[in-house]
Length: 450
Ligand SMILES: Cc1cc2nc3c(=O)[nH]c(=O)nc-3n(C[C@H](O)[C@H](O)[C@H](O)COP(=O)(O)OP(=O)(O)OC[C@H]3O[C@@H](n4cnc5c(N)ncnc54)[C@H](O)[C@@H]3O)c2cc1C
Figure 1 (tube, rainbow, N blue to C red):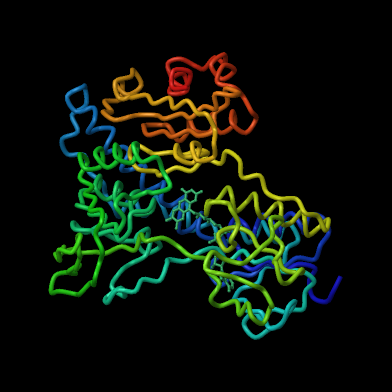
Figure 2 (figure 1 turned 180 degrees about the vertical axis):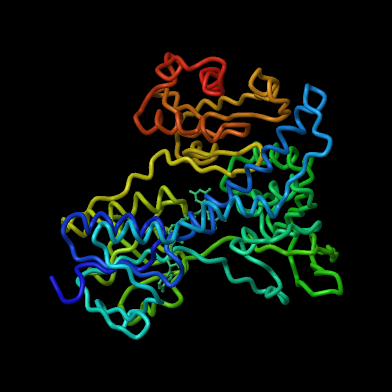
């Protein structure tokens, strides 16, 4: 093993921290570097702060749904400043505690931008480290946009740090970030508009359930404009004018804030991967299934910065990092298991996907039974005043196992965890139905959904 470290991890997000800790615990000399405070996207700028803001929106929506059913929500409102303080109460201590935890595990923590100067040499703020192995875990960054005035947009990080929420907000792009933020903003009193160039947003999710989500969102004040291109954004005296083109017809939307929700791309621009002889493409660092670089055997990559089949999600980043660490430690070739990983859009209510979409199941030649259920009138929804809910479960008729599950409804992101476990461990729908849940609970609805 060589020189300064056995392993240098670039990026102290969930992937980087998981791999650094694992390799250090096996006796390797490990360093990790980040150019931003430690913690990465999920803890500081993504999942966790987002869901703290969503909590206030949930309370607003829950009270609204119970109006006339025992709750008078008259002057209930979100105090955005207090909500931000609540968020900071969680996020502010993260960098220090994560760094201390890494040090306690024997990992050297470095600060600065990492750049390859050779296949196994990395520059960090003027210091060069010669190492045996490198793990690239640099995550993702907002996709560059190409219309005039794109510099006026704020990104998801800035949205999650806003001191105040203005009334008119345009979200560019119909992905999960736009939907989640728009659902929060609507409950906080703003009028959000999601502009998406595709015929339908949230393409990775079940089309029927996305339609229900759009309808339910519009009831809550979230407007979606599909098949609409943004041709430019200009600053005006009191905000911004967003120029759009809807199927050939130009129009404008006036806004106080325009938010980038048009997807993220691997964040590789400062790494100088050419010097590291590390091949990469628009989907990230090119790795084999076991996460080793296709062109530099001493480099591995994990998380949002790679071109793996895994979705850009925190649990996937962690799984990949642990597998990459294990393969580095043992010169192994284990590949991550991506089966049955659930993904949720945390709108109110939420939308969930596990496994195959309906057309994917049919295209793959499976003989599937599509079990669609409108759950809006079920007791669980009646109890909370919720008006929307549906599930679509795809069951392989040949073995009675679930190959895809799509859920739209209150608390269904929790329900998804049970379904994910059932799929991963090969349970049949008969076996799932034979399991007893607490009653009354959303979990007890599962048997009737499948
Ligand atoms: C708004 C938002 C909401 C999200 N919500 C969810 C959710 O609900 N559930 C979910 O599962 N996922 C969610 N995600 C996705 C999730 O956050 C990512 O999949 C996950 O954080 C990826 O982890 P990572 O370790 O690969 O990268 P990151 O956590 O992004 O860490 C990469 C780190 O590398 C550093 N870095 C980059 N380049 C360099 C360099 N050259 N030198 C030094 N440091 C560098 C960066 O500063 C960063 O800290 C969300 C993302 C966003 C943006």
